Amino acid sequence: MLRIKDVNVFYGDIQALHNISMEINQGEIVALVGANAAGKTTTIQTISGINKCKSGSIEFMGERIDNKPPNKIVEMGVVQVPEGRKLFPFMTVLENLELGAYTPEARKHKKETLEMVFEMLPVLKERQKQLAGSLSGGQQQMCAIGRGLMARPKLIMFDEPSLGLAPILVQKTFEIIKKISEQGTTVLLVEQNVQHSLKMADKGYVLENGRIVLEGKGEDLLNNEYLKKAYLGI
Ligand code: ATP
Image (cartoon, rainbow, N blue to C red; front, side, top):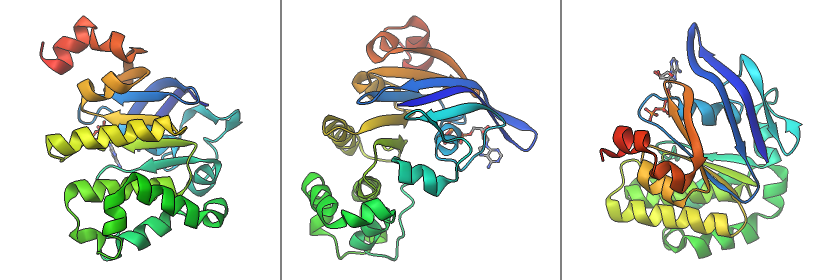
């Protein structure tokens, strides 16, 4: 579904991604894990078309997207739930959700998608008239996920969805991501929470200083000696 090949990305003179290659098959949950500043957000922003590749290519469903603007990439079905939620705090939950459905196709199906989102994330239905900025951290994460779903993605990319959440909410967030996957949406999960994300992933990539240093099945990576030592402290 998504093929990233030998991608190099720079911020000015500084290279943030070095020859990144990744593949995501339809229906998979793929985890991209790594420490602070490894380049995880840069990878998502590059897939989304916000950062540009200096070289390399990104294909989505057989079509090059690395030369397309972000809005076209969203229209094709590649949607991100950004790090830090990035909600509009002075707008209501409902208004935030509706903003997710701005593409012509998503707009057509807005009502039914909203019902699906409310069914999956009932707290959003209860709090639809509340200002997004007044929600708790966990509820804000649900709202950001709901907004992403409103775009009717084929591939949904989560940038550190567990960041700043209490352990019980981390668990809940991962359960929701699993459910989204089970309902047929392909998932790219970018996380510092190595254990949780690799456990639920079909495949994982480990990013260090802008380079992929390990890849494999989620479970195999969790048993990898280097990964255990460097990321899990065991
Ligand atoms: P975090 O978990 O802290 O978000 P990350 O793995 O997502 O980390 P990135 O945010 O992609 O990492 O950053 C990768 C590298 O690129 C870091 O060295 C960072 O300082 C640098 N970087 C990120 N954004 C910019 C920018 N806009 N301008 C210059 N350098 C940047």
